[in-house]
Length: 313
Image (cartoon, rainbow, N blue to C red; front, side):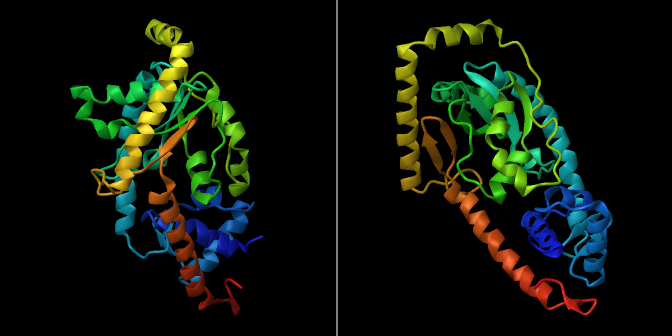
């Protein structure tokens, strides 16, 4: 097991990559080993004494920069406002054909939103109908009224009921999973969390109770009728067609190295049962940066002495 100080370091590095100071309670939530509040407080006090970390009001950071506190507080406030919008939009998205669950992911699910933040949605669909559902949802985004509010409708991660387990298993995907905020669904989200219990050991202090709770709303006759129309061989063909068409279009975008509105490379990883951002464009880059920063900070902390002993051995 990692030394407690190194476990603390890993949490602080993770959030510091987002310039996000955290509370002691949040450190305990995301630390990778069981620890009592008393033991954690003692370790943090030791690290503060050695000036390895910095106390900024109720927050703790690797940076001695009080501007981060104001940034966080403003971001928390904006996230609260966006979550209210996300709740209403999620109710609408759930009414689309074959949608079985809608959750909010990304920075907003972690209670932070900068001035350019999007609302990212995680959507579970009926088995073998992901691409019909995704196509209907993205066609909806083309409506002029919605098109001007695209930042509120970032439906970028889809899975279907046939394959709920997340393929990539690491600290990044585990964090995304446990911070996912269920909004509306028929109970399928519970199956999703059960299929991804591999994430539990990453956060042994995390309270998983009630994570899968989401509101339920009547699907409505339009959704039921639309699904009735496509619950046949035509629906099978159409889902496969949309899968092939979307995959071809996105492969072309990646080949041409197109950029999105934020100047980031566009990429989509597709399969019959999944549609998600290509991990090589952010996920893999982030993990490489994270591991590099951990090594850098570990080296710095080794130079400091607390109580006559090195913090990390």
